[in-house]
Image 1: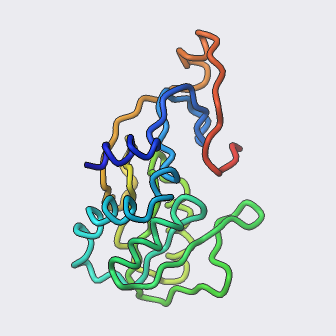
Image 2: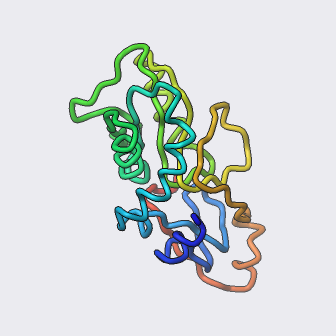
Length: 185
């Protein structure tokens, strides 16, 4: 069901992509295309809600940009507040008067988890506040390495990626596009 929703909303793209990690790939999940349809977001994220609904979550936190709508929809379905972190001077932070209290059980959300960079940065901020991290929730889990937190996904996708120097698409002279919102460092 999830793969059909991704395809029907044109969220699963084929081509040559420069990922925010600096790696290259021939497929990319642009979950914003799926999330523009609230009914699709509700259906897909219900699968995640069903996995976490009994974990006693107090608040849902999504890193900007990809985690904001996911946090909102999961918070709505779970009946808990949903807030977000964002980068300020290159550092992930909690702004806009948002707060997480010591001991609160927090679910961190993303649209797609690949390296987990934004989620782990968000977790570091929340742990400094004394939050208890329940795990990471996402629409698409394409991670290949353990992140030391449970991942609750709607779908797990194995999407190949390469270091730029080893990219077969670059060797064929196919130009890449840089989707997503995070700048490459």
